[in-house]
Amino acid sequence: MQVEEVDEEEEVDEEMEEEFKKKPNPGNGPCFKVIVTNENGLQASNPNSVFLIDHAWTYRAGYARHQLRQVPGLLHRMANLMGIPFHGEVPDEGSIEQVLQEMWKYNQTYQLSQGTAEEKVPVWYIMDEFGSRIQHSDQPSFAAAPLFYMPQQVAYTVLWPLRDLETGDEVTRDYAYGETDRLIRKCVLLPWVPTEMLDVSCFTPEPPDEHYQAILAENKEKLPVAINPPVYAKDKVFKVFTDIQQVLNNLTHPRFVFTDNEGEADILYNFSHFKDYRKLSEERPGVMVNQFPCENLLTVKDCLASIARRAGGPDGPRWLPRTFNLQTELPQFISCFQQRDRRGEDNHWICKPWNLARSLDTHITNNLNSIIRHRESSPKVVCKYIEEPVLFEREDVGLVKFDVRYVVLLRSARPLQLYSYDVFWLRFSNRAFSLDDLDDYEKHFTIMNYAPGVTLKQVHCEDFIPLFEKQYPEYPWTTIQASIFKAFAELFEAATSKPAPLGICDYPSSRAIYAIDLMLKWDTSRDGKRIMQPQILEVNFNPDCDRACKYHPTFFNDVFSTLFLDETDNCHVTRIV
Image (cartoon, rainbow, N blue to C red; front, side, top):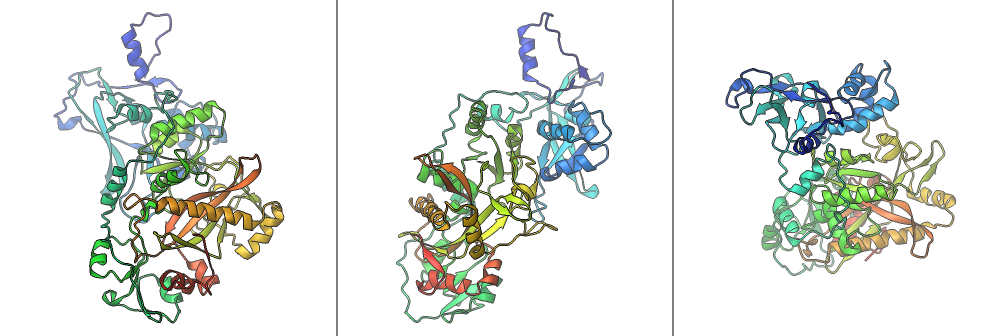
């Protein structure tokens, strides 16, 4: 039923008014609520008191705009449901934008637990007009949950009473269901109950030791026992056991041979994560492995942000965008967002899942409600979006974003020995950059080799450097690369500065290769000069080395020689630390 707003002049007792303030209606339109009409009320124990609610719109966030434009009647229905005036027949961008802003007050989410990475990206849905008008209460009368009905391949919402209700009682649900912490509830309910969080500090110190202990336990990783660094004969030929096709096809160095028998191997070069280092260290301490215990501290985005604070204090170092873990640092993030808003600073942020690659389920937005709600779908970090990236002039399109991928080789954690492969890789956006159309993938993202029907612009690094220096004559690439390597050194020093599980384990038989993706942003140095500041975006374990092998046939020979033979003389690598 539609609820009339009470007129200001009429006397309203204060308790009623407080109650009313607690139940804001989402959207700007008329206020609705759902009530029990059965004259005998509803009994919680009665099987007929369970209801099914239809879903009016189901979508993945990246396709919402496209669907509002294309699906007949969808924009009209959503605008009506959200109380947005829309009178036209043809979808107009203004109304679409309003729905995209308002929808975060209405949508719910679930994700499929199986299928490809793409199929596991969270699905958002908006209940029909009835379901969407059930209001929030901290003491709800009903509970609601999505149900995926396999025979029809359709999702519904199930609604059931939590207590007996009389006729006229209101049907409410808890919009922050499952949250018990008062401050977090306040944060989670912010889209419907706007509050200022400016009194909360944005300060995000490094998490306590227990945080890292819990991650170790969750990963089921068993740390190795202490061993002496293995010593090998100078002319030893190593037997390599690997399931990585690129290694099998490209490693031709005479001191490495392949074996199909894992038990006789000297080197285990696995594609998937190795877990039981304890057993390996006790039974076969001389066997080298292409991974380090606890390396997820680098390769998982929330851990990367935590350990980076060792290098740069609570705001993080200059080479990492300001990052918050939405599961554990939501109040600090909201305070930071609201303070920036008050100071008139740019407030574009990028929401990323902790460990999905290829920009899947990654969203750029300046809508606080959207960021708060994204936390419900899967664990995410939110990073300050680089609003002033260094751009590259592409003749065909203009000034575009680009990112750079370096492959680094970690030979040892303690003492730290780190190398960079001498070739780096570039990826470019396909449309000229501007801080708008935030859901335009080809403008804001650079990963084009997985998107169907999208062109992939390739420039080799040897061709890129002169082009870059021509566009930015005051910024020679050698200087830029020196600042990039300095950032890498600081990152790995931070990651290895504490014993496992607070840092990467210094297991003497471990070696590893990582790909680090970064961008450059315009910044101001302490003496007021415009500088290009590297921004590390992520560190990838076992990166795809297809392009490396294709253009540099000695790639894996160089990698293996550096990591396992300690011979770098004729290899295309540079020592960083």
